[in-house]
Image (tube, rainbow, N blue to C red):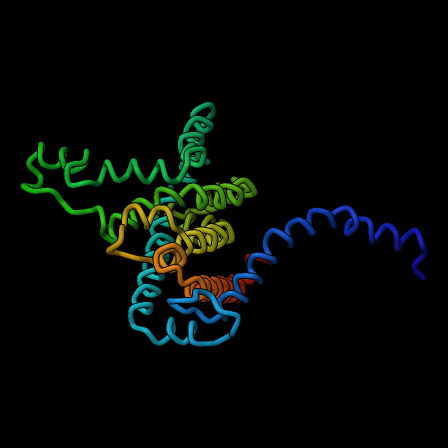
Length: 290
């Protein structure tokens, strides 16, 4: 039978974390609820946001091909950035894990250093590099590789490149945390039993770092799907994503209910995709997570 002391001990963690949970709930849930309520309001070009409620905002976003193209472009951008982050981040992290000190610490600082710089500053740097008169095009033309500038700014390719640079450190951190738990003797045992380096990586190392890869993929996908600054600066007005479309409705046309409905649908789609992928991954790699 549980005693009073046991009850108090069980409640202690909740009591200690209550202030943080209350602050988190206030700062996160309250704005989300207000945005959800705003998305159902009626908008008038003359009177602005009205007191009445309607579902026309959601119907407009769901049925209009213009917004369908924007959501499809956002999904393509998020998937492309996630795949590219895996291809670059996983080998990069494995190489870093095999380095000796102090080179390991220096290279890890170089990889994670961009997180200390504003994403706007980094994106503006990519604008300078990728512009028609930027560093990259000047070098390519000076080496006679191309005869005219390659258009990278205001293109999907440019957005993928810039956003991958912004988000690769999150993939590196996720895989790095998993690699620190990896016992190197297991890999050495595979090599001593006659397995090639590729076979050992595929059958020993990769399954064990897969939880980190999946965690990093979820983080990168969620951040790239909701990214605003990089698509706005690199994609411009021509290539809108969901975040920039919502921004335009809020501050361009001042149609706050429509902008709120776009934001809510982005949140729902993001949560549904991330949750679904997590469930599929847990089912597929259940033996790893266990």
